[in-house]
Length: 335
Image (cartoon, rainbow, N blue to C red; front, side):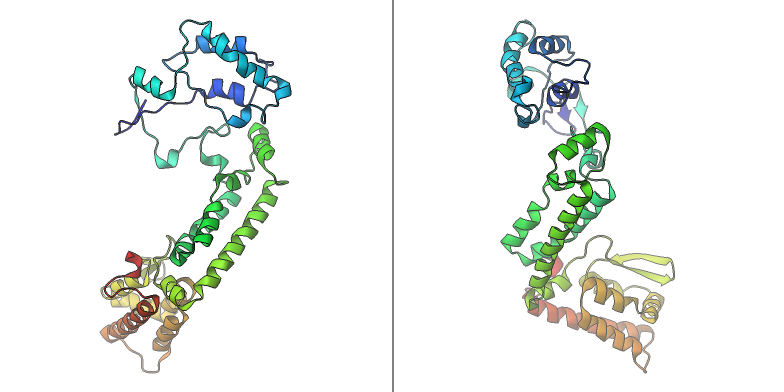
């Protein structure tokens, strides 16, 4: 096959023949047990298509299947048995794609990722259940923070926690797939693996936030672009969205210049700006300044209110940029 809109050649794994070696070779319950090289070569000879691609893990030969079970003897005998069939030839991947033209085009959308794990053969071995989703989302939320610090040690630790094995151990599947997940895990159960991973991730987050208390980094954190789901959405009244959502202080300032005054008044009366700036953006100083405007005995209205808010936020952004050492004219979110 070839990848869609590309000249990249793709060799698809023959999962049945591959799994006969990788997973079923040592299974007494399998109706083809025991499997020997003669029988397997016969299956290869009967297979359809131009190329038979056999993909198995290195661990298959000695770890998944112990030498005492005959896996090494099987591997040693297979080339000779296959060579007895005149229409079978051994080829490297490069030789295979050079000898044969693609028979079709394949397109795998990013949300339809394929794998050779479990029965589903999709990403559900690593992502999907609540423990996996929570762990993944928590790890992802640290990305901008740890990259903003730029500390190589913290970034390396953060990347270590992205290893797929951590999420694989959180699988709660049953049956055969569950047995495979448990076989590879060093933990007593997925729940134990989740507890351990969460503690380690919390420790890393604590280290990151301790670094962010330094003035320069604290300013950069406030100026950062927030992850999806943490932005501020302007509304006119309860449950009536304006359709405008901002993800940073710069975007907040820009939108305040054009958003309808009724939306500004609505959020000021509820204290929404103050809460978002304090609890999401993380700028207590700016939140306090906005609160003072709201609590002032001299209530500003209309364009006067807008003008006052813009002046406060513009001044605060310039202060933060100075502390964060952001060059003049450059937004922190553009760096």
